[in-house]
Image (cartoon, rainbow, N blue to C red; front, side):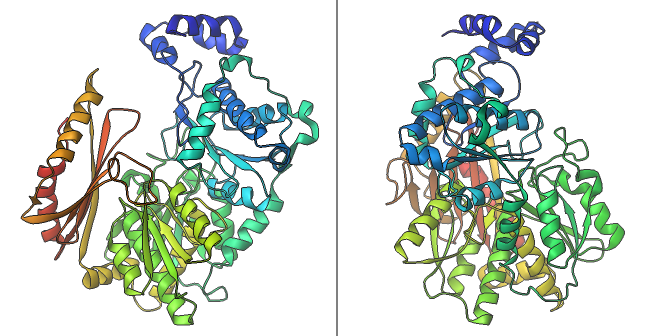
Length: 554
């Protein structure tokens, strides 16, 4: 179906409010963008700008995705339908509508659904799939994207986002839905007992699991914590858990209320420096030790450390992950609970500082492709085999998981453990930046950063792919005078256990690496730099040279 046909079909068949929105658009380029294609359902589900049209996030495109998921569930048999699906949503515009639409489509197929009474975090959704014994889960969220976005993510029975094989199967069913406007959606009243509202009874068990992770549950707390949920779902669980654990928490009140416009923050993304302005102001006012921030669906944790003398230092996800890992392994070793078969899991674009930390404790390190679903899948496999004991997993993108009762990154867990680490080392007269610097002294200074390039125009993807092909065929022999010892090609020669993925990873003789990873859907390419130097100045000099060699010129 072409643009004009799609547009006319929506004018004829969509509800009055949607038609009114479409008729109000006078910009033909805007209409073209809304209807030139269908919003793509991929390995991460749906994500897009909210609005009317086949290429937008709205109740119809959500219904289409859910219709495909429902058909997939139905062909798995009656037990899958009876086990059902649990549904959660964040604070964004239309999130409740999309969650109820999802429940209504599933109910129309006779599939049991558990719908959270109000907004909940992504990690609690992951936990609740397993706790309720469901066949799968859905969370409505666009994570840390701007306010105009929303999204739709699917989870399997392990509480893990769908890995590629499963995602491809579901995508086939979604793409078989010919008309998103004709999908049957039951109201909550029509669905009756097929839709069960859940809430505090799940929260309580989840909080208990999180609190059980503490090494010092009865210790007096001396660390002072500033916290911002960035208007998202973390406000209640993070504050409740930290309060129960005895921490002095100073909330950034202007960023606590759920707000789809994120009006009290410059960015809801903890990877962006501007997200911390209000938190740092509150730190100064109360001389707080740390500030923590969670993104809107509370799966990512960012942190700022008060180093004294007006120095407030932001930690990257690579740095906070390595420090949390070091704290966990230190405490396990102290109390004699570190398993002999312990394993830490991170991704191929995550800094190798954490690898060095793990190895120094005799802990195995395993790598996955980018995406926490791959870490969750490894946890499942190790638990099934009983060969290795998972102790920690993390990504460079500010996400980690401690207790495997959830199978997605969990900023509620991370908040609690980060605060406990800050408290533990404060008793030794150290900040967490001091701890990070000690890790640098032992393992080398690590500078981890990214660059990205967007290739514009109709030939953008072709140009990007040509540059990647050249890099693949003729890899550099050295960079900054450092030999390139190995090239890992995850597309043409993926390691055992890896699905093919268009990623190149260059391993350098000094312990650095560079990874190049293009987007699968748009002409953009990311380059990840993990630069190991003797000190900061050495690493910065190397980085500048590495960028000359590896940055793709758009």
